[in-house]
Length: 54
Image 1 (cartoon, one colour):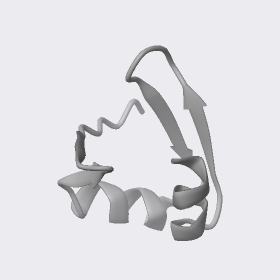
Image 2: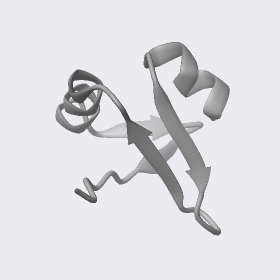
Image 3: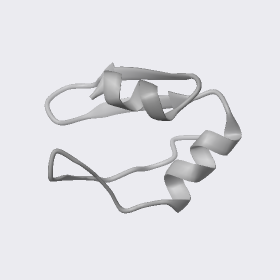
Image 4: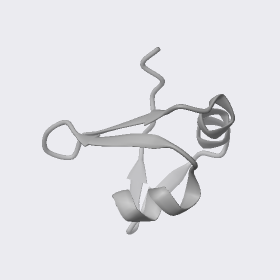
């Protein structure tokens, strides 16, 4: 997943937060906006539920 995301966004952090939980941290507001407004997102036929932690 990390390598796929790296091809889409300029700069971000990806961490595994447990079983089926991941953290994506974007450093460019435009990337974050693109992700949040472009939902729903899937990866390998699995729905990604995104939430802005602020």
